[in-house]
Length: 313
Image (cartoon, rainbow, N blue to C red; front, top):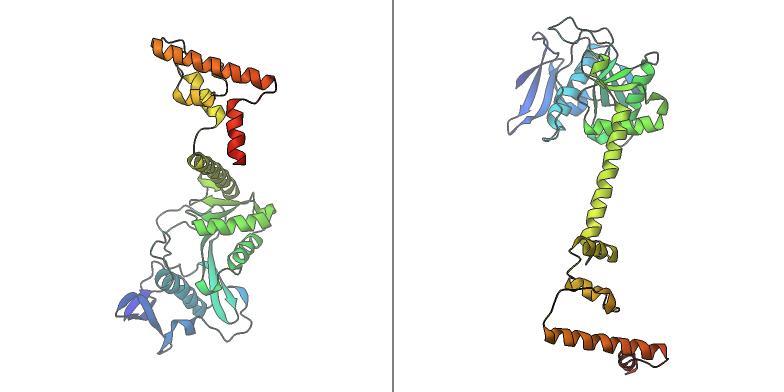
């Protein structure tokens, strides 16, 4: 059994929890009202008026918020690779719980404009800031995150700018993208902010999303071009032509000679060869010209005759 502080920076209010001895990250039950309660039972309500987003007001609702934040997110459902960890909220934290069919499904908290940033300075938030948000696993993929973000914007409809506490997770950016594409009128209002939220501490969320999309498209095109180059068995004709120009004009490469074999006049190589090679080259040239002349007179060349033979045999 362990005692966990119910509120941030408050040692007076604590909850007694039963921890699984074989897994210290698993809370089995909470001691409330002189009895032990399973986590799932704490998350339920018999009050049918609790449906959708409701402001946290009572002490019992503060306990539900604590269980959602510290136990379910912090211990039971938090991925080992997750880079975000919420601390217990303050006693007067502005918060809403999303209720669905009698279950506490999610929550979000807000740092109200004008409230202190922390207990160590006199700095106050210069705009409303959505500080924490969490949706339980079994209630995800149902638009709950977008509903909470929309509620946050509607609650502070008179404000020119609204903040999301930095750093904003990758999952939250996906929620923001879907929300802002659905509600373009909010694109200019949402900012990722560091406390206290001065203009120099703000980054436009919509602008950041647009920049990420452009970088992703550029990366996709680059990867596609690389795959094309890797998939091609050889260079294109144009690539080989450019390669020829880049080489010395006084020496023809074997690949160039093969490329232009249909017209040996195009293979220009003025370098001196041996007398034997020169005679062989001249004979090959005369043979090609003779074949070309017979073709112009309607006579099939030896090469064409052999091709016809291979095709009909």
